[in-house]
Length: 262
Image 1 (tube, rainbow, N blue to C red):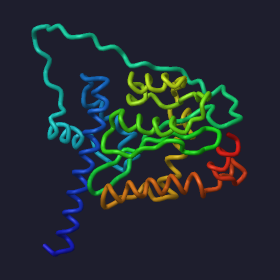
Image 2: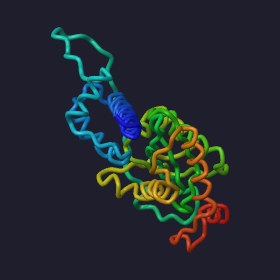
Image 3: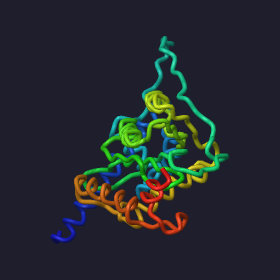
């Protein structure tokens, strides 16, 4: 085998391992809410996130990853057993679709996206002001758990002027539905809004911000290390907020509109 083929094969194996790590994270996140959900349904639910992260696994390969990570469901015991009741996570109606936004900090849009590296995926949590388009909070970390979204929320709340309480809008991902996250938002007086039917359309602003960061600031590529990706995320957010003019803002930057209006 030539040196070129050797390194190409090694890179391919490395990518497959990174892809498998993402699938395992997605499955564990969904299983935290629906612990007995079967593999076919998990494959269907994870398709959108995998496609966004440029991970393409057929059903057979998906089941293979679940088997390798010990994520296939164990058979239920034949004898009944008593368990604690599982309470459903809270869901909320879409409140922002009827809002007339005239100033910053009336509504924030939250979303999660994926940053690929040779060392594995990073999970980028974003909170964007729906009037100024400014990213008011963000966090990139190693896990899909609620912690990353909480860190982004904490950043946004740190700079929220006293007396203001935005509506927090997001999809119905388990991170945003978690009791811990909703509780932290309520502590600061934020009300909760969520997508209902057409998820992508009902959270279009957050989806658009994700697209800009990935397409215009190269966060959609593959970084060598997580450290490089973290630095790129911080730079991309700063440039987006402070240097990128928006047509919808009459070619002002989000930071300019946010600061002036606030």
